[in-house]
Length: 218
Image (tube, rainbow, N blue to C red):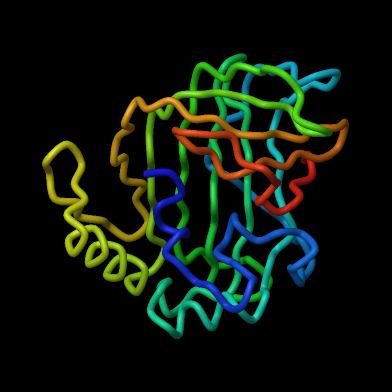
């Protein structure tokens, strides 16, 4: 279920841009604005010589390619901007999130998804990045509009995705817990005193580059 909602394939030349996969050097960002999350931060995790704690938020990304993706039917048609969010939820767990918005200032929610990870363990360095492993414990989604609700209900149904065998029936404004697979993932993290970035985790190998937007600590 890893980033399922925002990893429906979009390839334009060599550029891949779907929410969290946008590389910083490829993105055009608007003002970060004010972000109010719904995930409670707690605890801290040592990552190399730095401490990962609290909430990290990327600028509001209103890259034109996002709207193009929505127009092509690979995102809800009302999604025009996105941002990445990372929340440390305990000494061993994090919430990795992608939020989509109906406006270019990231003020009105279209949809968000949250990947819950536990058993967060830091291993050896890979260049300037640190290798980490963790286990998927949950996947949550909240539709902020009827457009997003209809889009993802259709997507789940078409692709045979259920919540432990139960049809996923979203309600606008209500967070839906799809459940976690319990699968173990490998990833790369970069952390300093003010920012965090990560790669796209995999069950089979470590990624070779960062793919999240640069997220600043709030």
